[in-house]
Length: 134
Image (cartoon, rainbow, N blue to C red; front, side, top):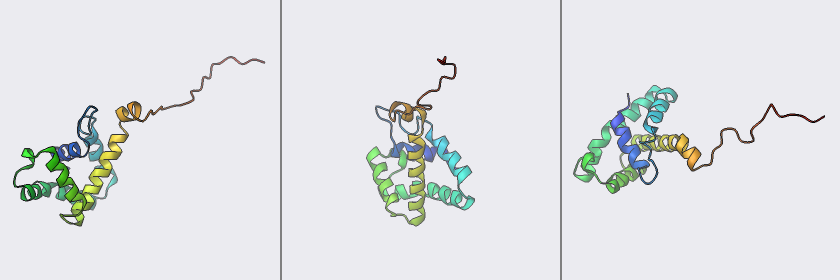
């Protein structure tokens, strides 16, 4: 299973809390976990989990302290290193997966759709009981 604490940490860095809710408070980690479990091959899931498990050590080596003591700017800079392939192709691919699923999950939450994207589930409503003139 994917480490939930790591998902919360990195998804919170990808789309942090601000005046509007971030990825974590809108429940995006559950979406990402489900997508990984249901839509990715076991080999891809295993690689993703392996990379997620190595991130704390990489972060410690890169920054000289644990992730728990990191500032938002340090987390962001570390995410850029992952994205650019600084820790290898597997880490770069895992980061792309995490970022893509985080953005997909966030932009399809009810909060974002209704409050920011003006989504209407059924535009142009049909009223089947309207009287008809002959």
